Length: 215
Image (cartoon, rainbow, N blue to C red):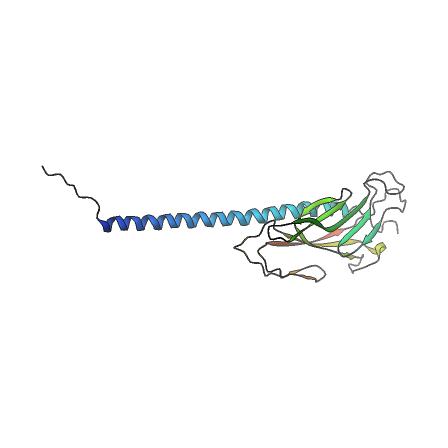
């Protein structure tokens, strides 16, 4: 009996290769899409966790500004600028003049490091401690309001603080371009940066619960 020794024709092989190529291209495209999505989510999550951690600490302590349960008059706001806020609070409940750990300063500072795009890395620094509580903070603004929610420069009139904080991703994304403008509470425009970094702007009002209680 004659055996059927027919194989694949060249056309059949080429069709099979073409189909395989299409399938592989689809798989790679799906993988690349998932990878890009993961990179974006990782950047956004890391950025939000960093800025939230620093902002939450700052909010908790600013609420204590002027805390003076013994009515000594020694605890108040020491300095209030657009980029830093310095105050005292009797967190040790020991009265008298402010002691160790009772003077607080929040400010934007140069970390002395550079990112992958050779840009200076700024952070949110807290005293006491003097170390960063949040890195990759691009901008920081404090606006001070009196009891009628009017902007004030008088330290004794401060009743709340509006914080505008702009965070930046740790690394650039070559597939992303950021031409966006960011507007702080005071109306200050930050940007456009026209680079490959994602950013997030958070604006938070903090009531200074202890300011003005002795007046």
